[in-house]
Length: 425
Image 1 (cartoon, rainbow, N blue to C red):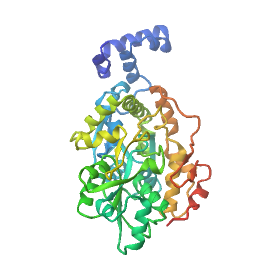
Image 2: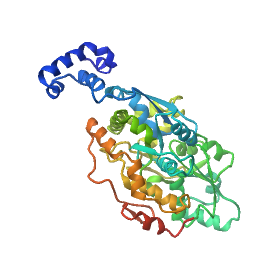
Image 3: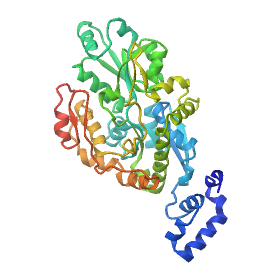
């Protein structure tokens, strides 16, 4: 069967399906499935008990490099293999993504890890039970400081601390959503340099694609955002990279495939199909530099990130320049798969965001850290999807990491961890 035929809609292989049903009746379902061509197995999947409840799935995304696996799952046809059509929909801000998820305009979204947790607990927007189906990427965000700070001798966090202590004015830093990943990376990095983000500086919320324009007109001294908007600031000569987020936490969780708990409960087979398709896209992206280059060329288009390919490509390939003279090859650049280590919805990853929400006063009391993570992170659905896509899963739902300040996070005592920080709200 040709590749084109293999990816046809189930209705286009009705004759083959009848042959499948006939053979299943004679030989038993398992034996029949084993003898089918890949295309017929796909048709059987779509027609049988694993058939997705929805065949067209609207997935929102923000114009960022790490929307790549959602876009490529559709662009490369990985979705068709699982009997679905992914429709990526470009959104203007994380607040818009949140609202469209909550009201059902979107089925799922490429979304900030901490946003999903915040909505679930009623912080950062309306309270709604949420679900995370998988992690989409690790690493690849950055903290950009303005060229004006560079002109005053600031090249790192220590110099920034010295300037803030000596220059009596209001310093302003931007993140992309109050409970989101970029806010937490920014706050953690500032605090690691003894700068309290709640007391020593002002923080504002700006949508990712608007960061560079706002820095150009002097609205902020620095920001934390995903690529390519850190690289863009260097190219436009308005800022430089003071730190990457992999400097803060190597292989940190970043975006997730988020939805509401109601949607996941109503469409479990669709959730598994979408997750499996995006897993395959993630594996494909990380398989070669050529695939990463093709990905950069695809997502640079106006319909997606809407920027020059070169702005995306270098950091996509791990080729970094900080804009003030340093260049390096970063082995911890943005990862989409890493043998499935990226994508597993570790409970400890979710709990970490809760500890930081508690640290910075977004949560007034300690939540049931593990209970909340188990409710949101759909480990069971993920395991089903991983099995379908042939992706290995880790033995533990928890993992251990050392962050920039030397503190180890392993998820075992989140209450103690949240209370342990000297710099806090």
